[in-house]
Length: 362
DNA sequence: AACACGGGGAT
DNA sequence: ATCCCAGTGTT
View 1 (cartoon, rainbow, N blue to C red):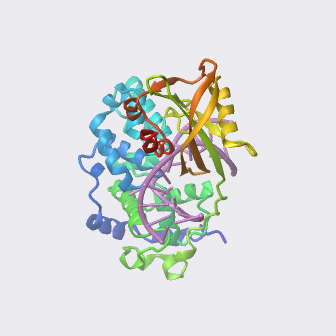
View 2 (cartoon, chains in turn orange, blue, cyan):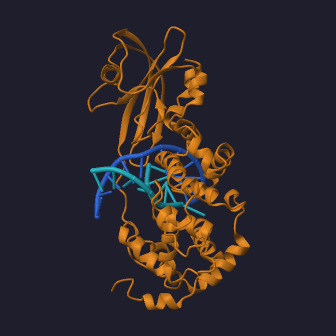
């Protein structure tokens, strides 16, 4: 039997009243809940994608301080936007936000659209951002379905659908559309997410503090630990990576800018690359310097090795100090001889930041 | 539908 | 170590 066959039962069950009552008494004081504007809500929701509240708070303050409104963001250079995003991850969010600000300026007369159809067409605005921003900032009755809502709702309604399956999100949106109160859609959405973040956690939810425990079907049936259903992820591979620390005559270090799109797009890094199977670290670095920079290098001292984990793989990265033996540096990517001050002013990935301490006593 | 895309906190 | 996240864009 489909878990959705009992939807009639679900629609009778009113979760919004106890949920919103609880939220009014327990809502956290967060920066983006003060001085609510469409812009501030939008920025906060983009930062909050795949990212925890505590991580976002300092970034939100810095970002709003530097770019207080959509016009300031549209005028900014992408590099400066990326610098403020440095360390937050998923840098396409920053690139899309910047593009979106310019689109608002050119196509919407500088006014952020407050209708879902128009807002949804901006770069980086998908189903979640659209629902969250349009409900919280503009009062549109559109339910959000994020990880927290999926988890909470699967438990409350005892839905056994796999939350990894895209259709589950769609079905749940239909179910929640019947629950969301039209007079307080934003509060309902925030309450659902806040419940998932603070009470209905993945591992050991605090059911004794849950405002919906009395009507939660998973709790009644002892299914809390079984829900939500999710297909397990494949284990991530680990790669060896080598990078070259190449100095010029005045001690500046060679850095290069990554392509504008793709992994860590638009950020700067030390030249290097992945070690192939069966290849030694020095051999790999010589190859990378030849391929990427067109130069022959001598591999010097090993400066540091760090580990870093991404979503789909892990790396063990080793930096070698290198000297140029032959050839003129040429690259399809932007290059720069950088001082430590330059390096501090440009956006770098976290893995490179882990090398910086070793750079000083090199 | 499947995959790429960061990083940090909780367990 | 492993899992989880206030998801979107591309293919």
